Length: 306
Picture 1 (cartoon, helix red, strand yellow):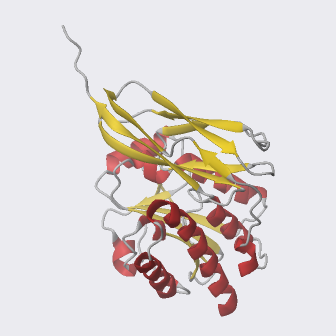
Picture 2 (cartoon, helix red, strand yellow):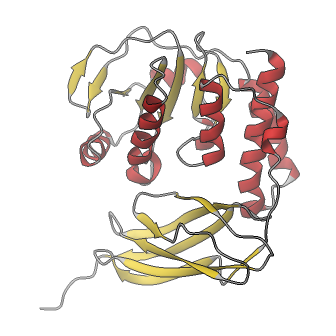
Picture 3 (cartoon, one colour):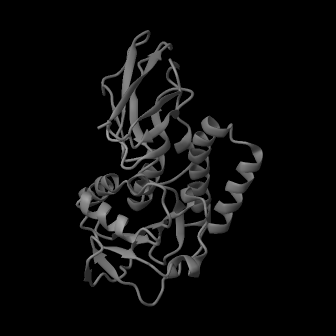
């Protein structure tokens, strides 16, 4: 991949990342500078691997899993407030199935988990029936060698056959990053024009956040967000992602005609008691896309009266 092409890849990631930043934090100039600095630092950087790596199935059975000479997607995860929120293993399984359907056997998925919640990670691997090999790196040796960014958005990499970084970002949280990864893997031409999407319509939403307040953590909570097409073209919901596996979203896949509404039914089922603040990201053909919705609350352990 030429340096020109690599620059375009990183520019596309920067724009995709900033679209989210704009909704959440107005994408302040200082944050933009930090992102640019990180992208420049990791552009073409070689990822180093420890000499000894132990891969297991569901964190139990050790297997032989050699490095292949092709594209690699590396996921590094350290401490997590919610294991299922960060891992999103069901989405990784979907992505691996997509890559398999492309009949491209030169892409290797490498998962490195380095945290103190080893038991919790193993439970999540088993719960998701995730049978792909993973490396539970208790010594954090991969991170020590490479000094990964602390921002979790920059802890997933697409590497070329020489283990050099050609793209950064989480493809299971951001569909634009997923499309970028797939284009690179398939050898499609990458250019800045790819990020210029024609704005087709405009939308309004009844609210962008909702608090469930205090409730019994064992009881599932639900709320709705109503999105209205106030433009003059059909509204297409391209994809909806959540920051947590404990958050579900149900919505119609049909186009929304001008003047009509669509409803997102959001459910939350706590894994453990405690305060939570989760994000739902809606990608659509609107000027303000992606839309960021938030739910929060306090899941309490309520003792029954005797």
